[in-house]
Length: 259
Image (cartoon, rainbow, N blue to C red; front, side, top):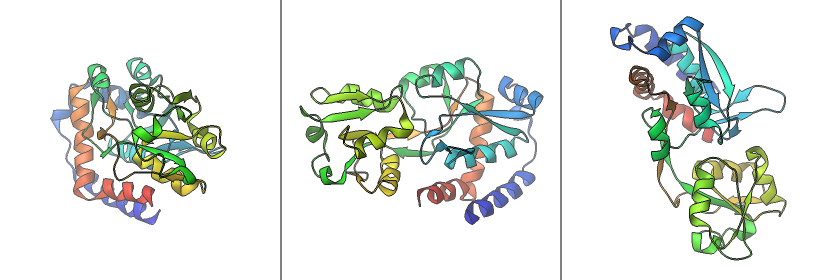
């Protein structure tokens, strides 16, 4: 992780050079962060490479590094709050965290209740299956057939996509996102449709599983950070992201976690 340390050092230099600005006044979120001396970041801990929980250890992942960077930029302590895909919007509305990270897809429904930061990356839905079925499950037509078992985790855009597009295959709802791919490897399910970035990670970690078409996903959607409806806080987060991008730090961290 030497490159991340180098990028973090570059960011620190940039942060120290950045002057305080009155344009951040009037944000209830920033005021709470300043009063507590901590920024609370919501993470699901079950979605590589963005965030996951080690069996006996801390959260790890791209957005853990990004959260640490944001906390440093806000001169606040990082506090990770465990959330889930089914309760993500509810937890934000209840004020359980200040910003949601961890590979959140921008959707119209989520925009109705919250703000999003500037996009982090663009991705889309793609299948992952046992390698012997790779050619069979390259298309939605090949997947949505009687006898095919499509597994999905609940509460997020994976379930939304599956329910909208899978009408003939059997849909299996698996509530533990951390173990969902083990079900395919073990033969208890045939295929899952998730974000292409995750299918690449799965292919690397499971000898028996392959990403079938990560370079030609079925959809295109942006991923960004989920924010309360606080325009000044959104501007502050976007400013931080813009400075990260200016020194190549955000893309550097993304590539580091995809290697």
